[in-house]
Image (cartoon, rainbow, N blue to C red):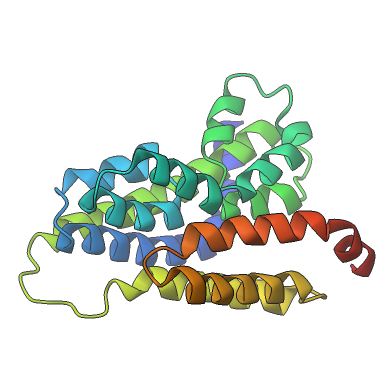
Length: 228
């Protein structure tokens, strides 16, 4: 039962593997070249497992101690998982102890596969969800470990490596732009970020811009839903 679910789940995660190994390696190198110990990105990949937030956390760990700012930033960056979780409640119901790991390991990619997969008869639904989630985390953990171990041997400057996080978010934005039928929400996000950049400056605009985006989208939710 377990192996059959694994054999069915693995091919569906291969595209995720290629992306996670590359991004995870870049994250590990970035963390090491930023001055963090080799074990830090590995532990974070294992117990945090929130790709974009892990990149942001590197700057938080090497910057000034600001637990409230870290809490707000984590909430803003990963707020979408609240909606993912709600939509997966029915699928993860009655899966026993596996449910707790599925809740912990939920990420964009695992959500995408588990939400849309058509599981054939003879393949256990719970074990399929479990293997998709576990394999995706394993890919990220492997990449982060490779990058962390390789990073300690990199003694030269790597200008531009810190741009990996920016590039990742740009790609996510463009991918979402291509998929959505109505671009109003994306345009609101860009305008809100630009406005807050002008008001608060490049060092402090992220949290205000995300708060403004959430507030604006909440107020305009009914109009936006009517256009979908």
